[in-house]
Image (cartoon, rainbow, N blue to C red; front, side, top):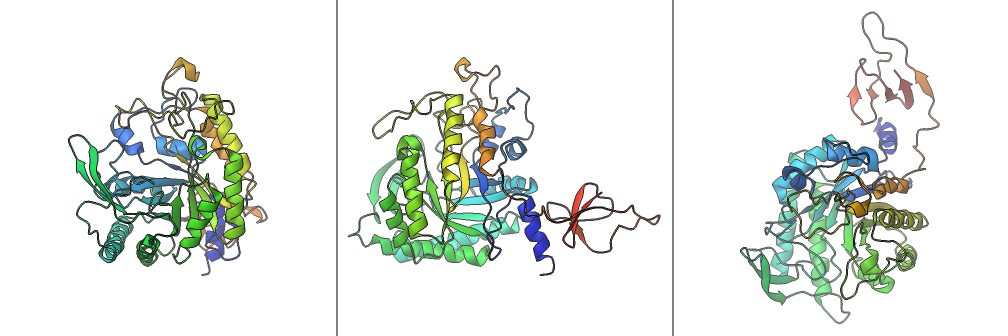
Length: 440
């Protein structure tokens, strides 16, 4: 424990969450779901900064330019081959190593499905049992095996989502997948939730309890998230989490897209209700995005084009207004942008192009002279974590004495760089040793 205070300072200096430290207020965490980035890179997608310079390492570009400190990556059991559904365990292991090597954190998003899991698609993986008790046990086994493999590969998640957008259930449906047409048919809803008269809540609670148990056993330091997508309905959102009180988790995760979930005043109502009813739980917006070229259409779409135009400027304005609102709520500790890496030059890796990413597609309407240039909203995200205390401002800065002729370091006590690595006398820059900052 003698280095505990030093490690806390290192986490704060890196902008990483310190909620595990008893009695501290968690710092805000800025992240992004970059699940498709390796697939885009493999397809030859190019990423440029705002001036048009090609970025050889887009992941570090997100870190350094946008201030992203945590990367959310989805995991499918046996990816179906649908567009965007390619993140199997090997994919996550490989991408996870890059994330860790970049000094970033990992949020693992268990979909517990072979395909996209969302409110209307929670298909039980092919070959899994469908009886409730057997299915709960399979979830425990699968979660355990997946996490063991990630830990063994040096890719221990820092945050873990127990399912994806599960307000109507998780692993609650069966269907038949046609690999040729990439379509699902013969849908049967076995364990649908969200109706107070339905007994399936007990089944869902049992599923989540088994998933949480596996996570606590394999990754005891990870923080667990239950993710829903009913931000437009404060009552329903609160009711869902009330029903899940018996589950061991740490963070309420919400999706918020204004075209589906209404305006910021609606989101504020939901956040306020959660703060009153669930005051011990942090809240993170684990998915959000806005359009930069054209607006979605169809039934149930809220039209906010008069507030935020479907343009680079409108997208930036949305990000700025969202952050302004989130900063009013002390229970909100995380903001994750969904799929900022979206890139139409990626050989149609993901179709249709949703134009919610943070890079231009080369159209004149986007005001970019070069294709795939970073859009203004990318850097606007940084405001969510700006102005936070670094936690070490009151520690004196000391100019380290020169090393002796023998090459011995300025102190015999261990010293650490700001990534928490123990370093030797050859280090140049800022180090921390025994609670003091040294400039070399």
